[in-house]
Length: 238
Length: 238
DNA sequence: GACCGTTGTTCTCTCATGGACATAACCCTC
DNA sequence: GAGGGTTATGTCCATGAGAGAACAACGGTC
Image: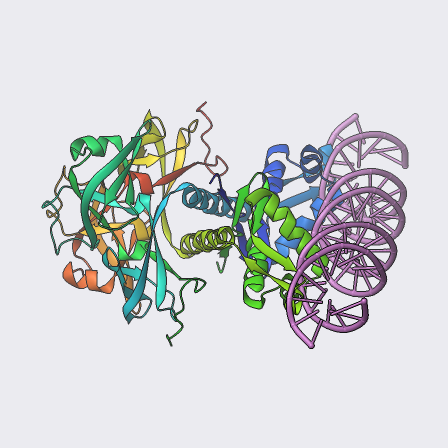
């Protein structure tokens, strides 16, 4: 399936959403030194852009220091708040991009024990600790490939790390890119557990097809979603 | 700042975007057994909903098995493809939600070496290996709290794990929730490195205020974004 | 064959978004 | 005081999304 994951990131405050379109407007103001030049550079109307700035400022505080009259007619510059806002959205976008591009392993399971937002989930591969939204018993766990750490068997101390979801398995595939590689592990389930690691790590861990490796991932990095009941017939939970 | 991170997840195929609104339509069809009942249950017009289904199917393949005439006049059910699509969007949404809620530590740095998409970045806290988009020298690293693993000092084998970004520091704060806790580490920089771990882990690692701990995180879980030049006065680079 | 509730198709109407344009206010330079 | 380029504000129009209504086609049941 050539199915692309996309998104539209936004920062929300007091019901007003600051999105990528707003960000490009602020950046254009920063670049051109005036709201007028910014709008025309973006091919947007001045009036809408100006009103949007006012709208944003009502929620997010001062963003654009505007000056009219004076030599050159005036101009506008961004406030520190605007720069912070831009940086925040940029960061959020980067994070989302990471998620959208990252492959993940999916395990179905049932919650057997819960302690607040954390739960113990029984899956076909074994028990997993994960963050589970309350109210769901049958869940689907998504484990991001970049959250999986690989180790050599026997080398991992049992009690001295905070990552304690652990599966041992056989390496069934290694796909190498420039500097990164995707390692698939057979952990006794239909689906393979994939880990995204550097090629460097593959060398130092001496990984090759057929070799044994331990994959570990943190409970806090494992998010669960309620399993859709479409196929299953169970609705017995609370 | 009570600034909420939000998003709008969508799956893209052949230029058509399948978003949450489409998902709710499919779910309503699944629930009510007919496109007609689904549309009116959602308060939408039938004609639009019907057209949207056709539009989606042109890109994503058969989604709704429609039957007209017959006893009861007919009805519609979802295909397996539709269920898969729903599950995929649900998963993506769950992932994004995780990101939006997760706190992160930000480090500024400069790229000193690059190997494909992977780069070595010099930061105030030390050198970090991270995934860096090509073309940027000054970057800002975002390290998600749930991607940071904690260890007791000395316990971590040097060469036998694939997580090799490592910082030792002193615990400066522990905020405990029900089952999770946020640990702040002083790693010699202004900003604290925060890790999201289970309370259980805090106990087994014997963490307390003032104790030393090692934080490690994978290069592949560390994404960089080009640093905006706004506040800084350096513009000497390319 | 009539009935019925569904799917399919087409039309008009409304509403929100945003561009295009005009005008006023501003304030420094000349 | 005139000029000039900016911010600020209002009005008109094009576009698209979606509601609503009307009507044909369908294929079981009665």
